[in-house]
Amino acid sequence: MNGQVKFIISQKHSSEQIESQEWKKIDRAFKQFVGLDHIKDALKSLAAWAVVNQKRKEFGLKTEKQSHHMLFYGNPGTGKTTAARIMADLLKELNILEKGHLVEAERADLVGEYIGHTAVKTRELIKRAEGGILFIDEAYSLSRGGEKDFGREAIDTLVKHMEDRSGHFICILAGYKREMHGFLRMNTGLKSRFAHILYFPDYSLQDLNTIAVNMFYSKDYQLSRHASERLLRSMREMDDVSGNGRFVRNLTEFIIRSQAVRLLKCEELTKKDCMMISEDDVVKGIEKYKKEKQDQ
Ligand SMILES: Nc1ncnc2c1ncn2[C@@H]1O[C@H](COP(=O)(O)OP(=O)(O)OP(=O)(O)O)[C@@H](O)[C@H]1O
Ligand SMILES: [Mg+2]
Image 1: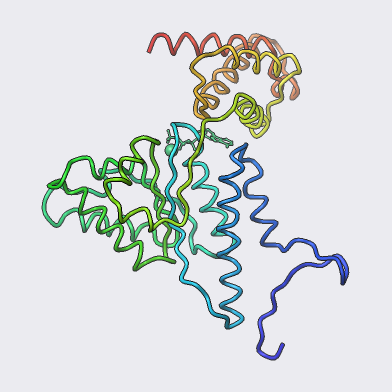
Image 2 (image 1 turned 135 degrees about the vertical axis):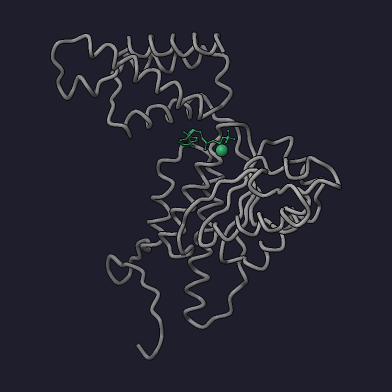
């Protein structure tokens, strides 16, 4: 190969190109992630850019210094942690990240109790995230205590390492919309350090329903047609849905437990029985869910 590295693109036949293996991996990674097309596009393009940059390096071409740090904001349960986890796995599969693990952290993991403690804690955390993603939830809590708070030191240490160790780990700061806006306003230098600032909007009812159905299927359950229609109808009638994937997860778990109670009252069970969720399971599961919510 004359010392040259070949960019392998699988080809159907000489004139017709089909997608590279890398693109297939990128595309596949987000298949189960419902809705949020703009998020998927942004994350896919970031992954593609990282792969091509690596190829360019192998070809001896000029490459940009890449920084993939990101900021995710949106209401609870809108998929921020899930998106970060998918990205960590994908970048490992593409050999962009060495380990591809996700280190989830919050204020207490970064901020210490005396002078000098915070820098040490933050550095240790970053070290743990090397080769993967450091995901800091409710990042604004770092700047809540004002000038004298050690949170400031954590931000400074983090920012320094985001630059010095860029390429060795990815930092994702996450949090809710209003608080995140305030946080960026208070830390004006911060915004420019993120490759993507992504807003996770609330899910539509249709998306929530798809998330629910996918959750059942991924756990080897099937919904009868009536059950599926009832689920959609009930979700439409509930007023605390608030665009939230976490709510859907809870709801599916209540429904699965209702099915279990129904099944154990039968004498014999088939594989199909164990898989099928009936309309009645949906109704009972939702009743239980509502009751527990009321009691809280
Ligand atoms: N787009 C999606 N496709 C499939 N499942 C999703 C999607 N978004 C969220 N979920 C599911 O909803 C649940 C909550 O999502 P996740 O924990 O990622 O939300 P979050 O934005 O990190 O919430 P929080 O801000 O409260 O930490 C998870 O169980 C996840 O599997
Ligand atoms: Mg989360």
